[in-house]
Length: 292
Image (cartoon, rainbow, N blue to C red; front, side):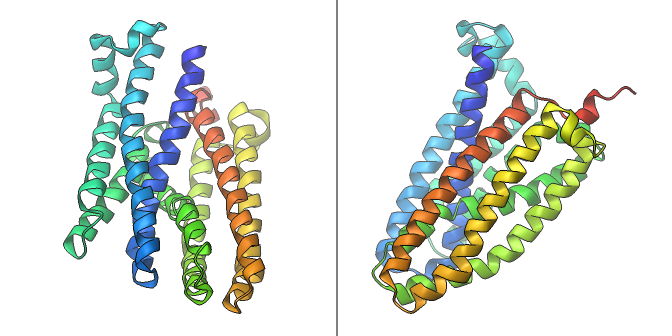
């Protein structure tokens, strides 16, 4: 039991670190030209810290999964158990993720080709989660993984932008901040649309029936996640429709409210990632439990 709890905790932290590092690079790729030098440096430092944390957590996850297999702390460093973990899809995902994050660390400070490599590395790191879990067991495996990748890219764009947006909202230049916020919101509509469509198709594949959404533990956790996502959408709508126009007019109080709203989004995102870690680690989707 203790190792299942540890696996959930490590996976939630791994989600957070990888999505924020990958999403942070996407944010810089899209909005760097609209940022001042100080904001770019702060965001880049944050991205690098998140990338290093994600690499460490990738190793920690492999070790915890080894302990789960052996049901003992000795499994954390048992070579035979760790080899079993690494020989499966988790090993492939870990290698892809680590390579992507290494590219982020090596090339994130460069422009041109270097920035393109860092962006591809970020997408690889984020997409690595599509290589593990239940998606390979439902429907056409490659299609399911592609859907998960689209979903993850949308999540990374949103969650990975929260700290960068917090940094932008703290700048004294409210006109520049408003321009970034407006551009981010416009692109977010597309990203969230793709996220919702991909997520809906994926849920249909994993749940199998509508009843499973309320009758299974997996479905109930999904409903909790959807409720939290709805909360995020409401906060984002307030930010876009109410606070961003006020910031564009130089309203300092609106900037302070926006920062509080972003902190609330960060907290909600954390709970969402914990819920996701639970139903992707210890709870199986109903479609895999149905009799054949």
